[in-house]
View 1: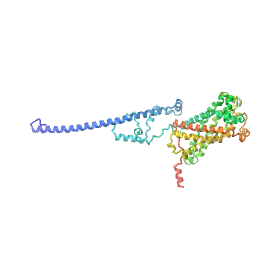
View 2: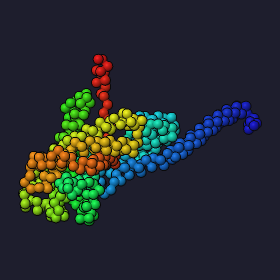
View 3: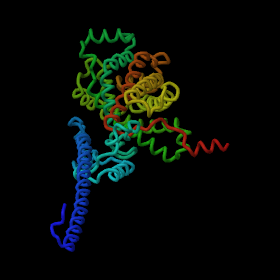
View 4: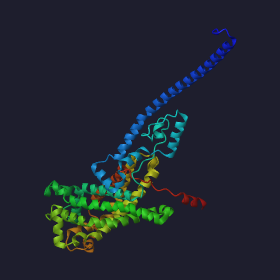
Length: 452
């Protein structure tokens, strides 16, 4: 382009201004190109974020649903009593959304450094790195979130709730078998077997006769389960702390026996009144048909002693039964995972773990029935008769009489014990309680054995 002026000085000044203008224009174009690139990157970043914001919304929705605990109304009411401070909606929602570990936070920080510094909205402040890299790192699964700490008061109380359901429901379900078993023990001439006893009961009393005594059974064994399972967990922790980790492992069978015996001692005191009423209703024809009739009648006839005169033979029956129930179950499950199940417990699904629990419970139940049956026969006869003692009944029954009805009791107790453990473990899973794996040898003990 020609110089607009003929004056050389003005022309030189015009050229310098033009060169400067072109240089500034090129700088401006570079800045425009950089801004466009940044804008495009921002759009890509925003699209990347919006892609995962939907998954974050799902995470938040799932977390809020977990915070609300989608339990039935009964469990929600019970949980508010046991954990009154854990139902703050803000704290629960925050806890459900913000379970990312420190490593996840570092990964999020690294992600923000390597990408355009466009930040997420503040109200979505805890997008987990595990959620972001869901497709890239499938092998690392988040740790299971428990509702309480192992050994805490909340844990022990909820274990007691599991005991109420496991014992109350199972004993009530097998009342027909219990009716025939008790009558075989007190009237062996008329009730000679399980099938014949069921048939005879239906002929004489109808179907209603098979469920006689269900109310004291449900109440009594629910109270027993409350004390049995809750106190077993309590005594097991207490005795473990007394022994220390090494001795607790070496003497774990003795620990199970001591904890279960201690728990059952108190559980039988809670069970004794309803057990006495139940046996009186089932074995004395025409005595009473309901709990409301039987309990006042017994109190008028014999006083308060009528409800507790069978507590000593009840201890004789239930303490060996419970010792075998817990110790045999614990060691059977340990053996099943060690020698039968083809993979470690932590690699088994919850359904597989519950299946192992059921099998271990049934095996333990068979041994329980054999160990406790003689005392059970004495209790049945003692609660039927007035003014009898355990020694008198034992002498009258003899060796053959105390084993009457054993096969029926094996079927009843085996099924009952298996279902009890299955329900108890299922309640733990449902309430998200810690379920420790079978015990392993402590590292300190391994080192001592290696040194020897």
